[in-house]
Amino acid sequence: LLLLCYTEEAAVIVSGLKNTDVFVGESATFTCELSYPGVKNVQWWLDGSPLHNNFVTEISEQDGMIHTLTLNDVACHDSGTVTFRAGSLISSAKLLVKGTSLLE
Image 1 (spheres, helix red, strand yellow):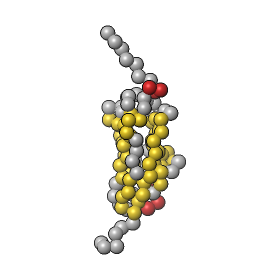
Image 2 (cartoon, helix red, strand yellow):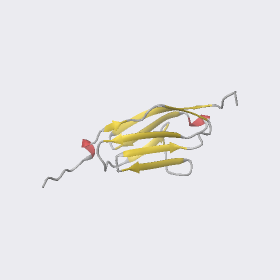
Image 3 (cartoon, rainbow, N blue to C red):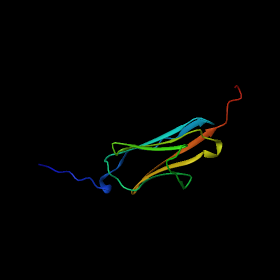
Image 4 (cartoon, one colour):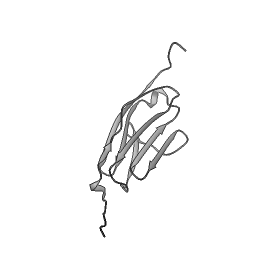
């Protein structure tokens, strides 16, 4: 019988956040995948401000390894740097919210 114990130090970011461009009123989704489940102190930030689960900000986790942030109905002032932190692991990406098209 072999028991494997995963610790926060053993986990790494398998797939980090990607820069995202969306238009005003759309949703922006960011996903970060970790190598192991169970990493503590998971938190999302937008330009240095912590984000919390609410009707505009959806934070979810799948299998303890895939962490997803969805920002709904974004506005121009939401443009900035999105940061995912899990223990000592950090991944960041840019969010660019563009104004509506002049062709509409």
